[in-house]
Each structure stands twice: as structure tokens, then as C-alpha cells.
Length: 191
Image (cartoon, rainbow, N blue to C red; front, side, top):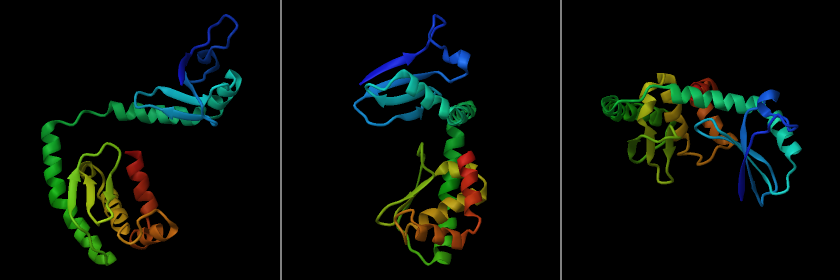
């Protein structure tokens, strides 16, 4: 696997900054397809087969430029958020330990499902999860979201008590309880 920073100069090679393309790093490996990754710092990585011509890589980046820019903008917004203090974290966790179990109990009764232990955590990439044993995990940062978004996560995880997948049957369970679940899910994604 080899990585090469792609910066083309003005000496005959096209310069991505002149073309308006985002800068990117190419990683060549024994893969068969190309893929894009925008890292947390906004850096774009293009993973390509070993012998992929530069022209094809550039065309691939050009075709996905709006997606790259959208992801970079989202990363920039995320990094611009103020840091959470230890006091805010402690208060948020305590509030979540009180409030989230109440919402779980309410929706579990409405949906006719049971559940095991409820754990409040601080996951980096998840709002909630449901184990095969019925234990539920929730991110305390849900307390910083609109109540409709928090309820969506609770219903989503409780729906896994009937369907441990994201099939059409699963989404039908969620929609039966929250007909506007798509809008609630959008709220979470925007955050």
C-alpha cells in the first residue's frame, strides 16, 4: 500500500486548486475499486487500485466533489462546536440516567416489548444500541437534542426488540409508533 499526496504544479501538470478540486491524498493498494473518505480533520483520501491512472482518479474526485465538500463542511461545523466541560458532562449523564429510563418505560409499554438493563454512555458515533439480550445503551448527549429526536432513538432501539435488523418490518414498527420518524431522524443527522 502506498500513499501519495497529490499536488500538481503549474509546470504542465494541472493544479487542483486551479481547477477548484479539493486537495486529496491517494492511497494505492491491491483493491479493485475506488473509494473516498473524508477524515475528521477534513482531509480527503482516495483509495485506488495500484495501477489506476491519475486521470481516472481526478475524474472520480470531480464527480464526487459536491459530496466531498458537503462532508468537509460537516466536519468543520463539528470541530467548531464548543468543548463540553466536565461539569456539563456530569450533569448531562445524571439527567440522562433519570429521564431516558422514563421514556424507555413509556414507549416499551406502548409497543408491547420488554428490555433488560439500560446503560448511559458517551459513544462517539452512536446515539443508542440494543444488544441481543435486550440491554439498551444510550448516549447521554441525547439530552442535548430536541425531545422528539431523543424519543426517536428510544423507539428505534425498542423496535430492535422485535426485529434485530433494519428491514422493512423493522421500519414499519418504528413508523407505527412515530409516523414522523424520518423527520426526527433528520434532526439527529443534522446534529
